[in-house]
Amino acid sequence: MRLFRGFALVDFPLGLPFIQVAVAMPVWAEGTFALILSLVLLNFLVLLEVADRLSLKGELEVAREIQLAMLPAGTFRDGDIEICGVTRPANTVGGDFYDVLPLPDGRVILTLGDVAGKGSPAALLMALLLAVLRTLVDEDLDPPELMRRLNLQICRHSPGSRFITLFYAVYTPATGGLTYVNAGQTPPLLRRQDGRYERLEGTGIALGMFDGSTYTAAQTILSAGDTLVLYSDGITEAEDPNGQPFEESGLERVVSTYAAFSAADMGTELLKAIERHAHDSRFGDDLTILILKKGA
Image 1: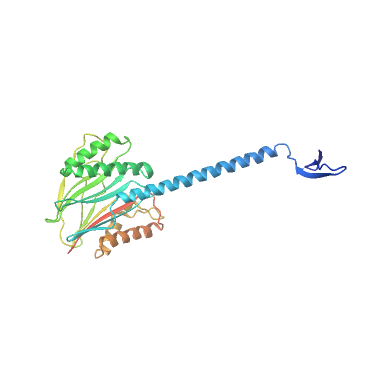
Image 2 (image 1 turned 180 degrees about the vertical axis):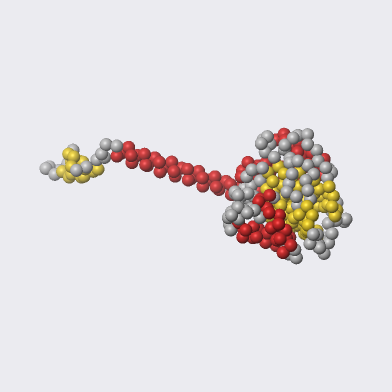
């Protein structure tokens, strides 16, 4: 074998007298082979990371489908009321949630909440809360007792750093009465038929903070033409490019503008308004809205 300007001449005998073929093959300078091997290994590791992320992305998409399946779909209608919710997580999955549960006696439960944090940990705690909540609903407890027991279960089975804000209400169509407990959730807006706004303020602290927490209920009456808007803080805290939040004033403006729309269409227009405000369809926090409209 002879070296010739970076190539090796390798002799291959062909078994014939006086005949041989010389083929030029590369010879690596000192350190070159190690460098190329490092690059090959680096590329291999990058490919493994990409494959792992693609696999994780697929798993998160499945998790998102499962999470959405846990929430009510479409519009709930009963008599003169219609209820519709919409949620948009900041990540593939999120910690915001809502629920609409019709009871055998004709009453309807509405709830909207927000798990501290975002992503998979918040989504898992959300699933736990919904499971416990729906179990307690079957026991026909009054709202303060249901919230007390729900808080106790969350304290027992969730990390100490996690808490959940929750608005829980029971609506009675026969009287228009709404009995509610607000455990640290952003106060829902109640738009009266004449355009006035009321806020359903908090009646207790967030769930998961203290296992001995107790809760009190408040009441109001929904009249013909009223609209109740439950929402997470991601709605009013959505910022424009200059850092100006959407705020309650933005929410009131949209609700007033689309007061004649259905609950579903009002929710759609509200999300569009927030996108226009933020100049983007991506947000730093989960967005969730639940709207109840009582027919005129």
